[in-house]
Image 1 (spheres, helix red, strand yellow):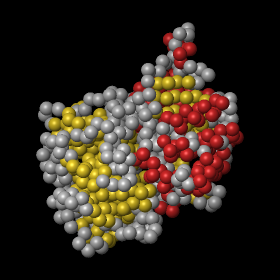
Image 2 (image 1 turned 60 degrees about the vertical axis):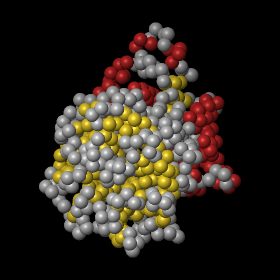
Image 3 (image 1 turned 90 degrees about the horizontal axis):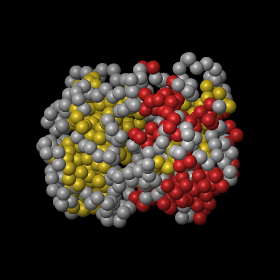
Image 4 (image 1 turned 90 degrees about the vertical axis):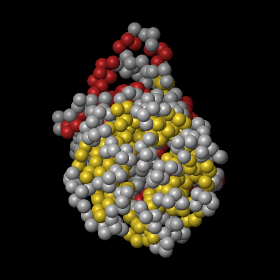
Length: 637
């Protein structure tokens, strides 16, 4: 094993990069400063995300990074200066101006990636920051009433695992009131009635099953608005119309994909208001005057923005919007400026707006790409392949530039979730792998991924878990049929659930893979379910199976990588954050120990100040340097 303590005093240490004090590095060979310089520009890109409109002025809050972690900035005009408003050593996750008043905004922040978020109030003008929550529990959400007088949110302070519903006056840190004590970690507030006499709640049970509820804040009484179903149905995004008489929401009721519905609250009757689509309506928003509706359609990962008059549904023509991903939809109070965040393969995420009166598209931020020409970055190709059972599986292929001849080595990069989806956005650092190393990258959306219908989404649950791993085997077969890809040089990597998929792929296809890179991945489903934070444990049992059931426990143990480690003979790299509440540190430590016990090659990188992935630039940079070294040693030699 190579440890950095032995290298610091060596003669060549001056030519290598020394990891910062928060990183534990084992088995990773020295990283030369020349390699860091070569990679340099690819680590200097940044993105910006729209967060909130000012309630009166045509100005916005965005999240971007100029130091080590993203902070909140204000932009007063398109292309204007990004003025930093928060200054913390930890990432600030969200921010929202108080409606109607503009006297400040709330924001959310945790410590060291532990995801025990606290809500804060930052006053305009004075810059004073006040803690609104208890400083201990996990606090999420932060929905303002239309007047700005109430702020509703969820907190685990009562039990440590149940997401109870609170509200407060954000100007008074001691005004919080428990509105509803719930059972479970999937409850959240989605909107407050215009008259503040009702709240809309979402009860998330699983990716395939959720409900809409109404809560009376005066009495604490609640009732279910979504029908009680015999089959599993998903509901989300419930929002009041301005008159408070109806709500809008999305649901896959009686359909493979989520559609947009309107429910009349007096009668309880719902109608579909989105056009006929064979894809999910993934997001929507309504203007303050209720006259314009905007929504996003997810077409196999590519997101399209649509705007129409409401309630007639008459389409409003917009200027062409670059192909990519669209998020954070929000209308300004002027009812014509619609803001969103856009990311594409050739553009880092940035804040945009569209004028729904003229259709004109305006770019508010233009984030740097390290001086590199983004138009030279690879655009993805949509690919499909047949799996073991004839099911069609989807993914995206990024090819290196034409200067690299012959069949190219391949990295399979598997997303987390598993109820997530790879979408063709900006690759950031990974463009180095394409442009400079000549490696092709495939991002598979194996069964269990979102965006391809509810049957596809549920196709990996419980005892069907390894069917998704077989999809990777079928992908390896497909690679063997492609003349521009080298089936003899393939490695696999992924984060979170993608980390489990990496480990599982190595146990199943060790002879067909050069190695694996697991980032915050599950190594044993039983220990994971027993130790993941309490507020998410039952939610994960619905997806993976309940380890307390003897038969399910036996299945989970049988498929867990720690119990199949003897099948892995190729090099492995394990990356973990010490404070990870989702996939605890133990999952990495036990996999590293098992690999080393059998004499396998295992690199290990752990950050003491990170959680579920590396959020601090200095840590993420070192992780990427080590990743490149692993690729050089394992895939390219």
